[in-house]
Image (cartoon, rainbow, N blue to C red; front, side, top):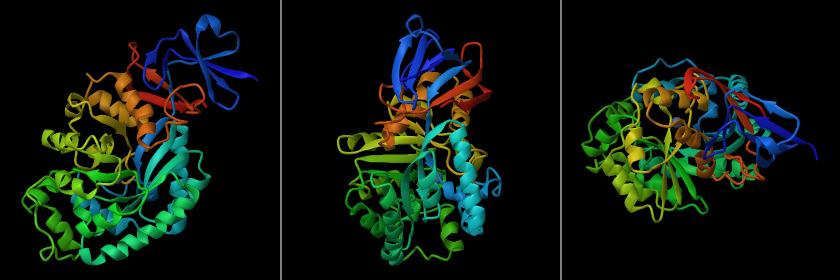
Length: 394
Ligand SMILES: [Zn+2]
């Protein structure tokens, strides 16, 4: 068997950043064989500038919105953003298919190995079946009026069953967000069998908490605009949005909380009381947060609390690119005290674990096939710069 050998200025294993004295050895098919000291690696070592890393894991994306790139202006705030999505998400099927295919290929080329992807319909199913990326499919349901809970649930269940045929272990049925899913619909989702990983958009705007704490704020405008009279069924809970809905997402063993821009210590304390039965994972989508709200999540607070962190790009409706490296660059620039090793781990092994894909992906461990990404254009000290690039090697 012929081996392939790779040596960079740095080798990130998925958990540790090693120096250039280490050589990554793979089988012909890319399966990890060894990490060998340079003097034992023998002939035929390919040399790379910069960092060699396992393929990145994008834990939050909406492939089916790829045709909306550049359509929505930045810094509108979440509610105007959602209203524009609802108005403008329609396009011809050809446009949608073409944009998804391009976005999927761009993610692969930029070193992404797997994607946790939100689907509101089955339009992305064909692309995902033929993709070189691994997909974990979050079939998303929304509907704030209790009257439509059953109908929305059944529609989503059809999409879920379609995805299950090809991705039996990598498909979940999930709620969209606390403000867009009725208690009744949460109940239907929570009751389905074998749905161990869930995901929910969480605290992306301050108005989300306000809506649950006092009943005020922009979400009233959202429901007025789309013609839903919420008074007959909606009462504020006097708790944050997250603390209001946590009891309604009781069955999943793992819960991916996406965005968390306005998550507080008291929310984290509440999650800690549940940690014996449910693992909360904080998915950061910093470029989308800057795009929509021009705010960043309290990453230092998550670090102080030892939270599990992963990264996502969100969709091309709220991001200029679907690049995990871009997310890492933004975090490095806005939070320069966070070590690169931590950020790389969020982007690789943490993401793979979160999506249950760590049997193959996320780290250079013997037998896995995580892909290899080369990160170039670093500072002298080996840190990311705004010009850093990620290129797929394998
Ligand atoms: Zn999203």
